[in-house]
Amino acid sequence: MIYEDLIFFWLAFLLVELAPSLDLGLDVWSLVLLFLFKEVLFFLVLTSFKKALPLNSRLPRRVHFLIFLMIFSFFTADLSIFGVKSLFEDRYFGLIPPLLLFFHYYLPARILLYNLNLKYLRLFFALLSPLLLLYLLEETADYLSFDYPLRTGSFILLILVVAPALMVKVLPVYELSSPYLRNLIENFTRALKIKFRNILVLKPIGPRLYTAGVLGFFPPFRYLFFSEPLLKVLDEDEVLGVIAHEVAHLRNHHGLWLFLLLFSFTLYLLNLLFLFLLPFALMFEDVDAFSEFFETNKEILEIILSFYLMIFAFFFFRYIFAYFLRSLEREADMFACYYLGSEVPLVKALYKVGEATGQLFEKSWHHYGLYERISFLRKMFSQEGLSKEFFVKKKRRIRWLILFWLLLNLFLGLIFQYLGAPFFERLLKFFLN
Image 1 (spheres, helix red, strand yellow):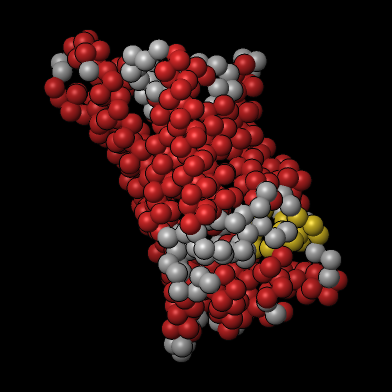
Image 2 (cartoon, one colour; image 1 turned 90 degrees about the vertical axis):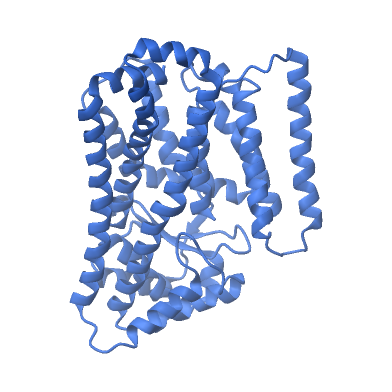
């Protein structure tokens, strides 16, 4: 759920950037009445689904899709038809009001339809806080005309250092109080040469939120956390299985590889934009001829471009990024079992989580389903003669695939620049302005 929420946030951010401003020719009072009707309709639909949903049952996948399609449709209308984008786009910190408007749809839907409590707000905004902090730093620096080489890079490094401590202040967590369990975890992580500043417990948030994770890249600012329901259902060896999985993420630098994949998203979108502009570069001899055509067909071209980029942005997160997420998750499962010398502790932990949440046989687009992970580990460890070289070979394959994806996007970008640099640059500036 958290992965889906963060991806939807990215898509909402892109929508703010890409949505065209449309003029339907309506007067102010008509727009106000239409806006209020849309608000009432949204909350009527939510409450209707809430009443129709049996207690503690899971929202059907088709209904889930329709709800979030409605959210993004209404949010697009706010940006394009009701003028929210044009009202704030040229102002400093102008991204905040549109995103708050998005959250006023998104969070009620999550809380009402998924039986989440208000602690979920704290969890969600804690996870968003590094991105929001980077945005605020960039906007403040622009406002103060404060610039220097590698400014954004230095801001990112600062956030990687300080954000975990800030997130812990926002999250609904408390320190692990059991001396025995704390000592067991510390001895185990020390043996694997991994240090944490503290071990935290996440308060109950929702009926299916059985999770564990790590906050922070650097040991003095790194925290290990478990959700309270997870600790209640796991035995000692199963807790160590979960910790081994999280340690595997750290020791194999999965955070860095995922950061590079997210960085590639910018190159990916830029390449898609060049592909969109390519037919125009072939059709028109100069930018002036294109500008005349663009002014005549401005609204339809902006709409087509917005849909084009949003569809491929969704494709990136749902399929490309998700593939690498699943691969790294499987890698963490394998190395966790390698550290433990057996697949049994992690398999037992996954099975208990599946039973407790009712999600044992459900598919997962970002982690593989729990039963899929269990079956894979059992099958793999039923083989004889598994050595460290076997795990390293699996690890190299995914690294080469990530590097191939990064180099492919970089290569395509250079090709586009080389083939049509002067025309493309002017066309791109015209389109973006």
